[in-house]
Length: 197
Image (cartoon, rainbow, N blue to C red; front, side):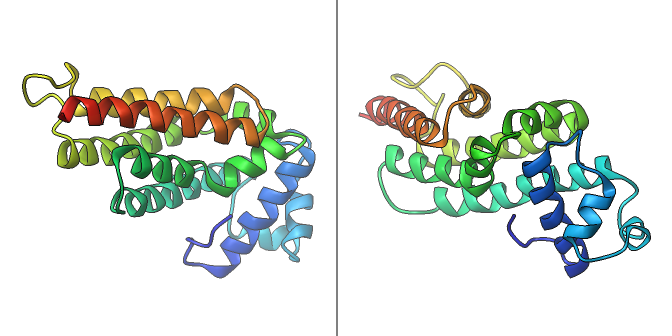
């Protein structure tokens, strides 16, 4: 996990939790496993988090915080629409997706995210959609006239984030995920570039 939590002890706990969840799965990971990985006592762990659900939700929040920053940076970069989207999609997937798709319990963690942190995921996905929609409005003028796409920037951004989520949930290996994400960026970018011609 990237370091974006202000309290260094909490970041240590989150890092330890991430490794425990990836190694043992959400269901089999205990607070003792997390405390041991963080080199602290279980009572000390409870000073920071109520339970493993609270820790897991914090990990999901951290993922979306990190992804939002990385996507904004990528979308501000130079290049064609396809190149910029490809960089943004890679930034959104990042290390976490690679680790999840490579972990023995990666699919369990993806499923747990949908159940344990559904509201956090919804808020995070809305934030990412807003970032993509702002980029679409700024760069391409989607929905702004003849020859443009019929949908709004928000509709386009929602379609992009849903497609990215679907590719991740397909349960493929990371190399296949990267190939499909790059293809998605190329297809969307080509369509956007053609609509501006």
